[in-house]
Length: 492
Image (cartoon, rainbow, N blue to C red; front, side, top):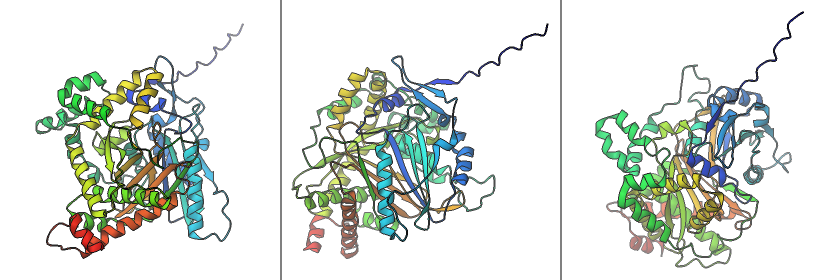
């Protein structure tokens, strides 16, 4: 009698526990604020969806995590390989709704902004790995790609590096050619300073520094407090004692629809020139212009922002960018003042720069990272209370990420523009994004449609505010740094 063949053994799917911080971001998902990083990449040539799928399969899926889905349970969250993974579902061809033949460049841009807003409002399928690429093969003479990746996979800083890993420095690169990493390594010293306790390991060598950095990869709040001592405790008390942001038209009950818009890019050399004239950093200039844009929009809507200061939560990277592609969330948050009530643009810049200097010497980011780790272990009811507590203290989330200052290519197509937005949390409904690439600075806004139904109107003020600062820089006395009094005289 012939033996009955044994049934094939089912392949055991790989499971991995999710870190506490990543778990916290997974559980922050709300209908009013899907926890997605959304990016827009615009190319000068047309790209086919087949070419994009081939590239994603070879490079994006080289990160095994993107074949895994996030599964949450009372015992904790887990990464599990998707047994039914379908690349065609994740990389999709898209068409811009409402676009007609012969549309102007502005009409095409508005259609892409509307499409991006719809995607930013739509949660990713929890039954699959939570990421999707939507390719508009025919956009403005080239193509446009909208990428959505859930925050639990990694922070926005890391995911920008992942997206950049799909690119090349030449249209037709050699097989062994990779994107130069020098621009990433330059960030390391700043990370050491931000982490604080790690800085003292620097002189002992790179391996010891790596071990020092490892302390912060998944801390509990108690461990962070123990390692950083009284200084961290003071920062925690300060964060908890911050007053709620004042009522304004930028705060209110959130809906489930997002609106997205972005400005024409600025020349990075011009931004640097303004920074030199006012003796401040590029970041200071850009955030002051953003504060001015919000002020201009509020006044246009009939609000009186005079004397008002709003806050933005700003993600702060806690690892060198060259290590960001290891994925996971490794950042803290600080509260940055946005002096929307200040009419003088130079004084507004001075106030932003002063706040930035104070934040550089603080441990706010480490406190926030420890709190996120603690929230990852807490019951969801406690998470909601903590999330509401901290989100009431700010009106916006602002990100500023440096990119490579050289032209890049993806699937043989030249990358012309790149924008991205991190999700807003809790009751925050405004997201500001600044990203530099190829000597240009891209500024974008994502907002709850109830709060900002017309983000293009707000975006228009950003260029005007920057042009005012550039005018002051060009007209001022170059022998010394400009100040608010001298700027006011020039504007009279």
